[in-house]
Length: 360
Image (tube, rainbow, N blue to C red; front, side, top):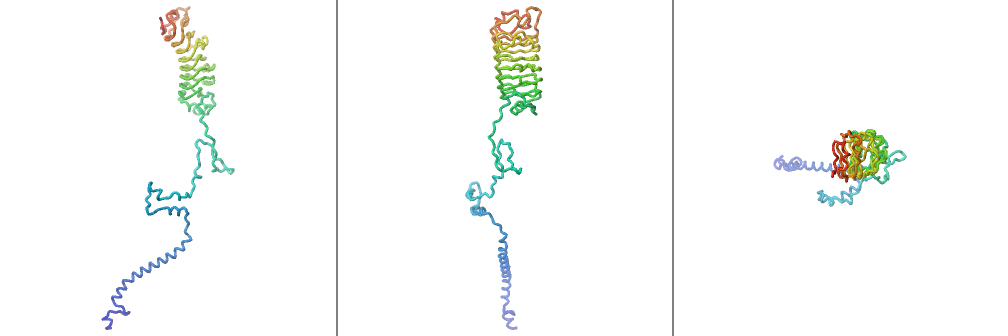
């Protein structure tokens, strides 16, 4: 008892100071043991997971090997230095998945005998030229936008159709296009039309006005206009006509200025039966006499800048009827002709106004 009180030793021969130091060391030993157990368990778990590890494509390893992770600061300037594109093998070829589309090719893909679409490329024919403007007038059949021409185009896709009017100005036409049967007014100015055929206006019973100003018309087939029983205005200036066509009795206005019409190109008494004709404009042609007889309905006669040199006393008035007065005919233009109007005073006595021209 005396030894234990003086030396401070315990039952197991340890002093109180030793037991205190040993108490501080115990948690460190325990912690070290737990870490050892965890490492052992992790080492045992690694072999168990080897069978479940999936293989990565060799291409991925190649990519990772080419990466410089120490300087991986991706930008447009160093992209080629960080990633070696020569080692990058595309894992998928998307070329076969996107079908090739040929512009202008309308044929469907070829089918296999089992009825399934074939992925084999189908050879396409060379692109066809666009059809020319519809220059034929023979109608093939009615369509939603007017008659279909022989080229397969509707007139109202080439021209502008508004109600009963068809506007084909400056459309590159070489012939009268096929027109809807309801057409009443046709404007085909500033084109390259060279000929008018009888079939161009076949069946157009409602047509009232035709304006073909500034074309290249040099010939008109017989009967082209006579069949148009509703035609009131025929406008043909600035063409190459050498003769006037037959006209329907319904005509009110005929304008054929700036052509090459000669007196030999007028039928004898061509205007006698045109009882509704009011405006006859034939200036700037090659006429050498005034076409007579003229209908009583005539109000305006323009013959300036021709080659008229003489006049018959019955050209305007009936020399046998001194009471005859032509009140309607108030506008006669003969200026620009080599005729001296003062030499024919008896030709004007029935007119309300003297013609315009040279009187000396």
